Image 1 (cartoon, rainbow, N blue to C red):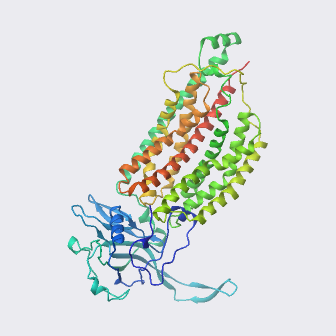
Image 2: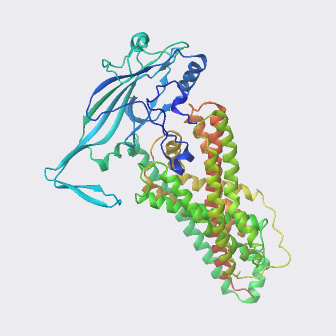
Image 3: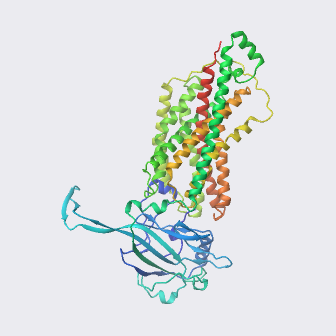
Length: 603
């Protein structure tokens, strides 16, 4: 749960706090960017004094202790580069973005604040020759104002590192200094007696060092250090690729065996004459006996059409976003760009959601009557659930005074985007769907439903178990995604994510088709919803894995409020995955069943 930097007793800038302009994605992520009191002068190494706080009152001391024990981090940027620090864990150097508010040593009852920062700024010197300097004329057009024959040079910031320290200072002596007065440089003490303890009535002095270091890193490569995976990543990559190939190989074998079985059944069925077919129908059981019921209208057909339409919208948004990110359009330097792009794509893909939901509605019911209601429900189903959950979570954030709370103006902006873009486009897509030809069923449906034989075990048990195979395709990648969201790590291996997405689509389609065929073989013609949840049940395992991640990887999560927020966002993620994967499975099974029964000779 993010909080403002100045909610803690830190030094404030001389010109007052100024907030940076933020895009839609940054606002939704709760990234509030303020200016800081730290002053850097290019290529000037210096040690400076900032300020000395008043004696900590009870609330400030309690808040500092709580945020320290909850392992809160301060995120700072210079020239759009996040500050980076390095720590040693089990002999391995691990890089982090940001620095902690303080630390609580093991075996000590006291908490210590980070009050001295040693900054290292990496700069790359560049030189230019015959550079034309372009000025701006009165009309705003570019004019050549000077021709530099000697060339021009300068420095580009290509790295930003910090070493956080806790240093005990004499508040009486330092309070006589002014902000940005020079002080003697210090080394970070290792003894707790020389560190600044967090205690009521304690005055805290904040200082910092700046060191500029020339680097060979060029401007286009300055983000490389942030996008590196942690130690041992090669083992993870090998494990992921190995598991994906095994899953794909096994799914391919199942699919090939399945195709051979269907082809053999069709060949035997079509080689028989009419009398033999009639005798065969009396003697044999299987999918051939549900020919008069297989396209019977499912329960809750409207809800099915709505969920398939929303699933198409979410799936399309995911595919286009990952492709664009793979091609490099979603740079990590553009904060919030990924989320903003996803929202824009989702809004404009409403036309696809409307078209698919209404065409499926027309196919199931045989008429386009009621298409407006279905289109409206498609436009409001998933966004409505999301708005309800986000509103509840936002009230919790408002109550906690977190910067993650969405401002009321943003709520109205999102509502305006929803009702002015997404809803009209969904209605347009629905109207186009009414003009499209419905998909004709290859067989007629009997008036009286066929009785379904009793089974030894519930059919839904197999449906729930089918979600384990798609989950096996993505669970390792899901770990990296959750780490990027909740631990502040950068995720930028979208090329591999695209491969995982393709494999996930293939596995979802295969699992759903196989399960649909198994249900039809036991004369269960109620395949519509089971085809959807055969692949959509992966969302259950995604949500359970999110809970596992919360318990074992986010043990520093502070209190029930943060856990509630985490579970709320995890529910939305799992629900969206259910709609997308369920849509893949249903559409594949639908066209498979249509092809299967169109291949049978019906009298």
